[in-house]
Image (cartoon, rainbow, N blue to C red; front, side, top):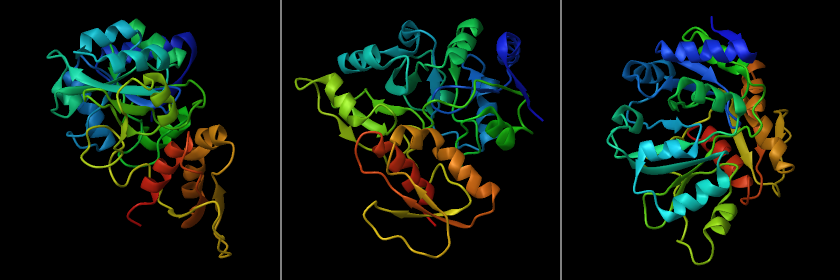
Length: 304
């Protein structure tokens, strides 16, 4: 069973494990990641094996300094530079043209790579001490509810990994916004805490148009129709709909969106922990952080 480690000694153990080619649970401000050194092909393979993740599904590379992007990418666009200047460190992932040095195991065989500089100080310290970026998808079984505490990681993957670095509960609680910056008009491929409104404001009225493409072929994590899913069936409602009185629990996600996002996955996990078969969910309005919450819940409820 995986050990939860913390503090200075926990950082040391985490870095040592990564150097040995192990995969580890790593805290970020969004969700906990399942991290491996990008220089180790065997370790990258373990990520896919542990998660049960298709190898065609690209991984996000996490860095500790913006300059590390230059080692991973070529032909970084002006729009991308503007976004990372104002959003890093933070919950924004950019897709850029990959350098030939980037393993295509990370990119799902594509010539583009997803990169993020997390704001969590422990993630930054581990990456800096390791001396290498890490690939780190969410530390859960593929398609299931993402982890926002170290204990969540142990519950999901504890039999398959050695340790989890405890960085407390995640501040954001949903995965990063992903923007494809390889295109003339950047596309938002996944909603997150950096909202479409903020992205358009950063790029300005004279900047390129920004499109929304949150489904379709998996150019980035989270684009599958069903994802982030508990075992419980979720019945979704707009906030002006009458709710049924069938005795099923009701989760309201239409107020205080920062707190909703922070606790969303914990609420979904509690449904399964209590063996609740069905829950009703009141969706937030489609604006701001509401886009990300709606995206996660819509995909969590899909196909049932």
